[in-house]
Amino acid sequence: MEKIINKPIVETFGWLKVGGTKVTLPDRTISKTIVLPKGAAQTLYFEDDGALISLVAELSEEASLTVVLVRHANTAEKCFSDLQVNCKENARFHVIRVILGGQRSYDNFSVTLEGRGSSFQADIGYQLTGTEQYDVNCEAIHLGKRTESNIRSLGVLSQNAEKLLRGTIDFRTGCSGSVGGETEDVLLLDDTVVNKTVPTILCTEEDVSGNHGATIGRPDEQVLKYMASRGIEEDVAIKLMARAKLDAVIEKIPDEDLKQKIREENGWK
Image (cartoon, rainbow, N blue to C red; front, side):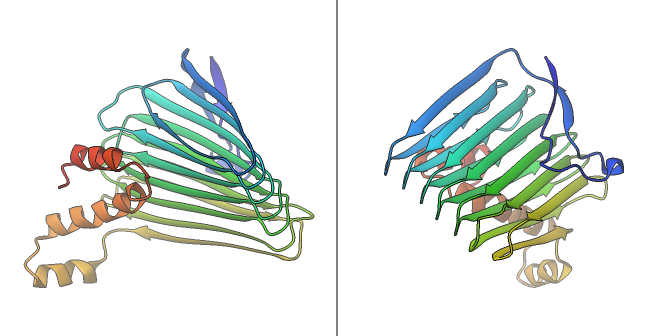
């Protein structure tokens, strides 16, 4: 089935070509609907295998949900995830996304912070090379008072890899005292990569704080010179810098065995 996915909350300039992506969805879907009762905590793990992962979650007061999504390297199938989460008072949602490779990866994370004091944290880490592509839409909709969102993305692009990140923080009327932030750190290893970042902050409420910061570019020459002075060759230094990006997200995964599996897959000790 062909469908336009990853449409942002508001349209932007057409020439940017970031208003959504037309794809053919897989026939197989892994669907899950959960309602966490008051104070409950749960962690879900998904390892992409070519299916569409669809999750709808309702988090009651003070409930906590963590979702870990991992895509391993050298997988040819297209991978999709669609997470729709609603958080009641003081509920917490955390998504940890790790992409080690794969030709086409698509993610949509839409979180509504309905209840007072609810929060959303997204940690996204990726390394792409060759002609691999990653397309992600991440949105935090603030409705309740004193809600908090933090979208963090760390990645490495090389050769002809492409990445498109749409990050939206939407402060709606009534969410006074809320805070939202987007940060991104992308290491570009070749001039032929394509990196698109579309940060958006929407606001119809006065008493809020929203910010965005990005560090995007090639390896720092001063850092490379410093490492060279310590006997570390440039190609090794760049690998260490790239590893640090992804490992900062991998470290967030609660499962030690899965963390070790990912690191071994990358040839890390």
